[in-house]
Structure formats: structure tokens, C-alpha cells
Image (cartoon, rainbow, N blue to C red; front, side):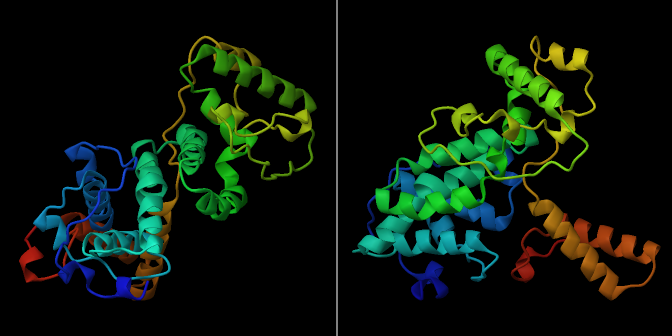
Amino acid sequence: MARCAEDVWRREVAPFQPVPGHVPEMTAELVATLSHDQQLLYRLALAVQTGDMSDSVARQRIGPLNHARWLTLGARVLRLYVSTESPSDSLRLLVQFLVTHYVPVWFCIRRHPDCTDGAKNFHRSVELLRELPEMIQEVVRPVLQRNGYWAHPEQVLLAMVADGDAGVRQEAVRHIQAARQRETEDVRPFRLPELNFSASAYTEVISWSPPESVTQPPLLRHLTDEQLQAIEHSPLQLPNYPVHTQAVERAVRTVTEACLAVRGEEARHGYITARLKHRRCHPVFASKKDFQIC
């Protein structure tokens, strides 16, 4: 990890062994929507997976290490690997985890970003985990268990009502109808379920018993019984609420900066919109050559 803190992009690329993984091929249009850090991680991971590292990718500067910037750590590990003639077993293991699990799951979420995709994305993570060595699985399983919010029955039901399979939707309707009959005025407890790491489908990641553990998703509370029944015949169309809050967290930081810099609602709004426009104009501003007039 100490070597990852260096300017690894300055190292010469050595002959390296490709590492099989599940980094997906993405369209140029989708890649263009990614931040600089995400684009670089994607291209480095794809290069390690295919064994084809272009000089333009190898020479790109990687962002600094930070506890909140795991993307740059992943990119640095991949870049270190391709410049190491005889990588250690530990480095190989880290790279295997990156191209088999971390990077594929990250971009799976980017390709399927809606709230109805959350449970499916989580199951994809569980699926890919099974392809890693047991020692890695033992480390990652408790992390997924502690963060299994998208495997909660409410989130799984949210994916099921929008599923293209009529059988899956019928099962969801039955669970929601039963949950409605058990509802009380009390605040429902939100408890993370015990995960089934052998699940072959996202609907099997959790156990549906006892029935009392199943509550209806808040997004569906407004549906009448007739509207709920209609889901059996066609998938429910829900608003495109995002499956993650990364953009929200970035917006909160920008609003905080605006409050510290200027006074008044109008001034804050102007500060924020100017900052957002600048980011769209200059996604990368590492040197003078990146500057352009918008």
C-alpha cells in the first residue's frame, strides 16, 4: 500500500499476466458520463483483464489517496500491478478482487442506477463473491451482511413489482397483500435480514419467513388494492429514484461550501449553479492545457 501512494503512473509498464474478471464492456456514451476517476479505473481494470494496456491510459495521473476515495486506491493498485515484473501473491489477490468483484459491481450500479435495480445489483455482488478464493469471501461476507440494506424485504419487493417475469410479480403481490393485512399504526422495525450467500436469484437472497418480517415498501403504500393486483399483468413503472446517494452527498458538500462563501438565498443559488456549470465545462483541471472558455 505504501507503493500505491507514489506516482505509480510514472513507472514503465512491464510484461504482465492478464487477470480474468467480469469488468463489463460499456458504450462510449456511458463512459463519457463518468467522472475522471471512474473512467480511469474502468480503463485500467479493462486493460488488466484483457492484457492490453495503452500508453495513454498508463500515463494518466491518478488522484490522491483518501479514506473517502477508494476509486483512486483501486486504480493505483491496478497501475502498480502492470508495472511490477514479479507481483507478490498479495498484490495478485488484490487485483483479482478488483477485476472480479469491486469494479464489476461498481459499474453494474452505474449501468442500473434505479431503485428497482437495487436488490438485483446486490445479488450480483453476492454472485461475483462466490468466484473469489474462500479467504476473500470470509472477509467480504460480514461486510455485505452489515450493509445488506438493498436485500431488505422492502427493497426486494420493490424490484419484484418491476420485474419482467409475471411469476415474480405475482409472488410480490401476494407478499404485499399479506403485509397490508398485518399492518398496525406502530413504527415498523427495519432490521437487516440474514443473507443467503448461495442464492441463485435475487428473490432468494433472503428468507421470506417469518411472515411478520415482511413489510410493504413505502413507495407502494399509495397503491389501491386494485392497482396492486394489476401489477400481476404488467410491471409497475416507478420514478427513477437513484439506487445510491453519491450525487446527493456531493450536492450537500456544494451547498455547505456555498453557505460558508456567500450570504442570502439568491447568492447561494448563483454560487451553486456557477460551480456546477464549471464542473461540466472542466471535468478535469489538472493543468493550464485543460482550461477552456465555456
